[in-house]
Amino acid sequence: LHEVMEQQTVSIAKAGIVCTLNARTSILASANPVGSRYDTSKSVVANINLLPTILSRFDLIYLILDNPNESHDRRLAKHLISMYAKEGKEKAKGTIPI
Image (tube, rainbow, N blue to C red; front, side, top):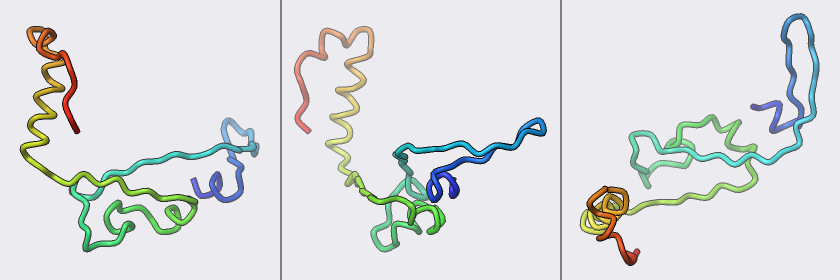
């Protein structure tokens, strides 16, 4: 991964054949925090447990945080389940405010 992100090439050595291929592409990655909860007292590196050398290769880093709200989460879960449950297909009309 370091080589691809830094030099835009990937080296392959299989069955006695060694070659280097161009790798001009964008990388979109996502990561969940350690312990499934983002700890605001820790750094991004400590929360997602990626090496700083890999993390520094990304041009942009966006954090999308979900603030736990039991009543909202329960309403959203019930709505999603009703959309896919057999008997709930008639109930799933309309939208739920987010």
